[in-house]
Length: 262
Image (cartoon, one colour):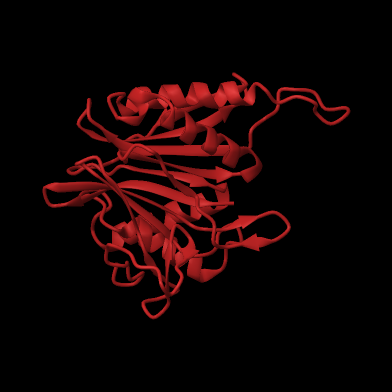
Protein backbone atom coordinates (compact mmCIF):
# COMPACT_ATOMS: atom_id res chain seq x y z
CA UNK A 1 0.00 0.00 0.00
CA UNK A 2 1.82 3.04 -1.28
CA UNK A 3 1.83 6.24 -3.25
CA UNK A 4 5.28 6.95 -4.65
CA UNK A 5 6.29 9.56 -7.22
CA UNK A 6 9.45 10.71 -8.97
CA UNK A 7 9.52 13.87 -11.06
CA UNK A 8 11.95 16.31 -12.63
CA UNK A 9 11.68 19.70 -10.92
CA UNK A 10 12.50 22.75 -13.03
CA UNK A 11 14.04 25.81 -11.35
CA UNK A 12 14.95 28.08 -14.23
CA UNK A 13 18.06 26.58 -15.79
CA UNK A 14 18.48 24.16 -12.87
CA UNK A 15 16.83 20.75 -12.79
CA UNK A 16 16.64 18.25 -9.96
CA UNK A 17 14.92 14.90 -9.54
CA UNK A 18 12.54 14.66 -6.57
CA UNK A 19 11.40 11.30 -5.20
CA UNK A 20 8.58 11.19 -2.64
CA UNK A 21 6.45 8.57 -0.93
CA UNK A 22 4.15 7.98 1.99
CA UNK A 23 5.37 5.94 4.98
CA UNK A 24 2.67 3.35 5.70
CA UNK A 25 3.10 -0.41 5.83
CA UNK A 26 0.02 -2.52 6.45
CA UNK A 27 -0.95 -6.13 6.92
CA UNK A 28 -3.39 -6.51 9.77
CA UNK A 29 -2.18 -3.18 11.15
CA UNK A 30 -0.95 0.24 10.08
CA UNK A 31 2.70 1.13 10.71
CA UNK A 32 3.34 4.69 9.61
CA UNK A 33 7.09 5.27 9.98
CA UNK A 34 8.72 2.99 7.45
CA UNK A 35 11.29 3.75 4.74
CA UNK A 36 9.97 3.30 1.22
CA UNK A 37 12.89 5.08 -0.46
CA UNK A 38 16.23 3.29 -0.14
CA UNK A 39 19.45 5.27 -0.42
CA UNK A 40 21.88 3.16 -2.43
CA UNK A 41 25.65 2.78 -1.80
CA UNK A 42 26.35 4.89 -4.92
CA UNK A 43 25.35 8.54 -4.70
CA UNK A 44 23.48 9.10 -7.96
CA UNK A 45 20.30 7.05 -7.49
CA UNK A 46 17.66 5.71 -5.11
CA UNK A 47 15.33 2.73 -5.18
CA UNK A 48 11.74 3.01 -3.98
CA UNK A 49 8.97 0.43 -3.88
CA UNK A 50 5.27 -0.29 -3.70
CA UNK A 51 3.56 -3.55 -2.87
CA UNK A 52 4.05 -6.44 -0.50
CA UNK A 53 7.06 -5.95 1.77
CA UNK A 54 7.44 -9.74 1.93
CA UNK A 55 8.56 -9.51 -1.69
CA UNK A 56 10.03 -6.01 -1.74
CA UNK A 57 12.33 -5.78 1.27
CA UNK A 58 14.48 -8.90 0.64
CA UNK A 59 14.94 -7.89 -3.01
CA UNK A 60 15.84 -4.31 -2.09
CA UNK A 61 18.48 -5.57 0.32
CA UNK A 62 19.89 -7.87 -2.37
CA UNK A 63 20.04 -4.89 -4.74
CA UNK A 64 21.87 -2.83 -2.12
CA UNK A 65 24.40 -5.60 -1.51
CA UNK A 66 24.86 -6.25 -5.23
CA UNK A 67 25.89 -2.63 -5.75
CA UNK A 68 28.12 -2.63 -2.69
CA UNK A 69 30.03 -5.71 -3.81
CA UNK A 70 30.52 -4.85 -7.50
CA UNK A 71 33.17 -2.21 -8.10
CA UNK A 72 31.81 -0.59 -11.30
CA UNK A 73 28.32 -0.42 -9.79
CA UNK A 74 29.64 1.14 -6.60
CA UNK A 75 32.01 3.76 -8.06
CA UNK A 76 29.43 4.84 -10.70
CA UNK A 77 31.60 3.94 -13.69
CA UNK A 78 28.69 1.66 -14.56
CA UNK A 79 26.12 4.15 -15.80
CA UNK A 80 22.64 4.14 -14.33
CA UNK A 81 21.12 2.64 -17.49
CA UNK A 82 23.52 -0.32 -17.31
CA UNK A 83 23.01 -0.60 -13.56
CA UNK A 84 19.28 -0.99 -14.17
CA UNK A 85 19.88 -4.10 -16.28
CA UNK A 86 22.25 -5.53 -13.68
CA UNK A 87 19.70 -5.02 -10.90
CA UNK A 88 16.88 -6.64 -12.87
CA UNK A 89 19.07 -9.70 -13.37
CA UNK A 90 19.98 -9.75 -9.67
CA UNK A 91 16.30 -9.56 -8.70
CA UNK A 92 15.25 -12.35 -11.07
CA UNK A 93 18.13 -14.60 -10.00
CA UNK A 94 17.28 -14.06 -6.32
CA UNK A 95 13.65 -14.96 -6.92
CA UNK A 96 14.59 -18.15 -8.76
CA UNK A 97 15.52 -19.72 -5.41
CA UNK A 98 11.93 -19.66 -4.08
CA UNK A 99 10.96 -23.28 -3.30
CA UNK A 100 8.81 -25.37 -0.98
CA UNK A 101 5.50 -23.75 -1.90
CA UNK A 102 2.44 -24.51 0.23
CA UNK A 103 0.74 -27.81 -0.59
CA UNK A 104 -1.46 -27.52 -3.66
CA UNK A 105 0.24 -24.39 -5.02
CA UNK A 106 2.23 -24.46 -8.22
CA UNK A 107 4.64 -21.93 -9.68
CA UNK A 108 5.43 -19.46 -10.95
CA UNK A 109 5.44 -17.42 -7.77
CA UNK A 110 4.00 -14.06 -8.78
CA UNK A 111 5.77 -11.12 -7.14
CA UNK A 112 3.49 -8.51 -5.62
CA UNK A 113 6.00 -5.65 -5.67
CA UNK A 114 6.99 -2.82 -7.97
CA UNK A 115 10.24 -0.86 -7.78
CA UNK A 116 11.24 2.54 -9.10
CA UNK A 117 14.89 3.25 -9.89
CA UNK A 118 15.49 7.01 -10.04
CA UNK A 119 18.75 8.80 -10.68
CA UNK A 120 21.10 10.69 -12.99
CA UNK A 121 22.71 9.10 -16.05
CA UNK A 122 26.16 10.49 -16.76
CA UNK A 123 26.17 8.94 -20.22
CA UNK A 124 22.87 10.46 -21.27
CA UNK A 125 23.39 13.66 -19.24
CA UNK A 126 19.85 13.59 -17.87
CA UNK A 127 17.66 12.23 -15.12
CA UNK A 128 16.13 8.80 -15.67
CA UNK A 129 13.37 6.89 -13.90
CA UNK A 130 12.48 3.26 -14.59
CA UNK A 131 9.67 1.20 -13.14
CA UNK A 132 10.78 -2.38 -12.42
CA UNK A 133 7.67 -4.54 -12.44
CA UNK A 134 6.75 -8.21 -12.54
CA UNK A 135 5.63 -9.40 -15.98
CA UNK A 136 3.29 -12.35 -15.59
CA UNK A 137 3.75 -13.51 -19.19
CA UNK A 138 7.54 -13.58 -18.92
CA UNK A 139 7.35 -14.79 -15.30
CA UNK A 140 10.06 -12.37 -14.25
CA UNK A 141 10.78 -8.72 -13.51
CA UNK A 142 11.33 -6.32 -16.37
CA UNK A 143 11.59 -2.54 -16.67
CA UNK A 144 9.60 0.30 -18.18
CA UNK A 145 11.11 3.77 -18.76
CA UNK A 146 9.22 6.90 -17.80
CA UNK A 147 7.76 8.78 -20.74
CA UNK A 148 7.36 12.58 -20.97
CA UNK A 149 3.96 14.00 -20.06
CA UNK A 150 1.71 13.99 -23.13
CA UNK A 151 0.19 17.06 -24.77
CA UNK A 152 2.91 19.56 -23.90
CA UNK A 153 3.41 22.62 -26.10
CA UNK A 154 6.56 23.93 -24.45
CA UNK A 155 8.49 22.55 -21.51
CA UNK A 156 8.25 18.82 -21.00
CA UNK A 157 7.08 17.29 -17.73
CA UNK A 158 8.48 14.00 -16.49
CA UNK A 159 6.83 12.11 -13.65
CA UNK A 160 6.39 8.47 -12.65
CA UNK A 161 3.97 6.89 -10.17
CA UNK A 162 3.98 3.63 -8.24
CA UNK A 163 1.42 2.39 -5.78
CA UNK A 164 -2.11 1.17 -5.36
CA UNK A 165 -4.23 1.75 -8.45
CA UNK A 166 -6.96 3.66 -6.62
CA UNK A 167 -4.55 6.09 -4.98
CA UNK A 168 -2.42 6.57 -8.10
CA UNK A 169 -5.54 7.36 -10.11
CA UNK A 170 -6.62 9.93 -7.51
CA UNK A 171 -3.14 11.48 -7.41
CA UNK A 172 -3.04 11.89 -11.19
CA UNK A 173 -6.49 13.48 -11.20
CA UNK A 174 -5.63 15.93 -8.41
CA UNK A 175 -2.32 16.80 -10.08
CA UNK A 176 -4.08 17.60 -13.37
CA UNK A 177 -6.53 19.85 -11.52
CA UNK A 178 -3.68 21.56 -9.67
CA UNK A 179 -1.70 22.21 -12.85
CA UNK A 180 -4.79 23.42 -14.71
CA UNK A 181 -5.53 25.91 -11.91
CA UNK A 182 -1.96 27.23 -12.18
CA UNK A 183 -2.12 27.46 -15.97
CA UNK A 184 0.62 24.85 -16.30
CA UNK A 185 -1.25 21.85 -17.67
CA UNK A 186 0.06 22.03 -21.24
CA UNK A 187 3.12 24.21 -20.74
CA UNK A 188 5.68 24.77 -18.02
CA UNK A 189 7.65 22.30 -15.94
CA UNK A 190 6.82 20.74 -12.61
CA UNK A 191 7.80 22.39 -9.36
CA UNK A 192 6.55 20.85 -6.09
CA UNK A 193 2.98 20.21 -7.23
CA UNK A 194 3.31 16.40 -6.90
CA UNK A 195 4.37 16.83 -3.27
CA UNK A 196 1.36 19.08 -2.70
CA UNK A 197 -0.81 16.25 -4.02
CA UNK A 198 0.82 13.64 -1.75
CA UNK A 199 0.44 15.97 1.23
CA UNK A 200 -3.23 16.62 0.55
CA UNK A 201 -4.12 12.97 0.00
CA UNK A 202 -2.36 12.02 3.24
CA UNK A 203 -4.17 14.73 5.18
CA UNK A 204 -7.55 13.81 3.74
CA UNK A 205 -7.38 10.32 5.31
CA UNK A 206 -9.70 9.17 2.52
CA UNK A 207 -7.20 6.55 1.38
CA UNK A 208 -6.26 3.94 3.94
CA UNK A 209 -3.63 2.64 1.51
CA UNK A 210 -1.32 5.52 2.50
CA UNK A 211 -0.31 7.16 5.75
CA UNK A 212 2.47 8.63 7.84
CA UNK A 213 4.71 11.54 6.88
CA UNK A 214 5.85 12.27 3.32
CA UNK A 215 9.35 11.06 2.50
CA UNK A 216 11.34 13.37 0.23
CA UNK A 217 14.69 12.75 -1.45
CA UNK A 218 16.37 14.94 -4.08
CA UNK A 219 18.89 13.85 -6.70
CA UNK A 220 21.09 16.51 -8.28
CA UNK A 221 22.90 16.84 -11.59
CA UNK A 222 26.17 16.73 -9.65
CA UNK A 223 25.18 13.09 -8.96
CA UNK A 224 24.49 13.38 -5.27
CA UNK A 225 21.43 12.25 -3.32
CA UNK A 226 20.05 14.09 -0.31
CA UNK A 227 17.11 13.10 1.92
CA UNK A 228 15.20 16.02 3.42
CA UNK A 229 13.58 16.23 6.84
CA UNK A 230 9.88 17.07 6.76
CA UNK A 231 7.80 18.75 9.45
CA UNK A 232 4.65 16.69 9.92
CA UNK A 233 1.70 17.07 10.01
CA UNK A 234 2.46 20.80 9.62
CA UNK A 235 5.20 23.35 10.29
CA UNK A 236 4.67 23.05 14.04
CA UNK A 237 5.06 19.27 13.97
CA UNK A 238 8.13 17.21 14.70
CA UNK A 239 10.78 16.38 12.12
CA UNK A 240 10.70 13.14 10.16
CA UNK A 241 13.26 11.69 7.74
CA UNK A 242 12.32 8.85 5.40
CA UNK A 243 9.20 8.37 7.48
CA UNK A 244 10.96 8.11 10.83
CA UNK A 245 10.39 10.72 13.54
CA UNK A 246 13.76 12.15 14.58
CA UNK A 247 14.86 11.88 18.18
CA UNK A 248 15.14 15.21 20.06
CA UNK A 249 18.95 15.03 20.05
CA UNK A 250 19.31 14.28 16.34
CA UNK A 251 20.41 17.05 14.00
CA UNK A 252 20.29 17.32 10.21
CA UNK A 253 22.47 19.21 7.78
CA UNK A 254 19.70 20.75 5.66
CA UNK A 255 16.66 22.91 6.09
CA UNK A 256 13.48 21.04 6.85
CA UNK A 257 10.55 21.09 4.45
CA UNK A 258 7.44 22.92 5.60
CA UNK A 259 4.65 20.80 4.05
CA UNK A 260 2.57 23.91 3.34
CA UNK A 261 5.20 26.45 2.24
CA UNK A 262 7.26 23.69 0.53
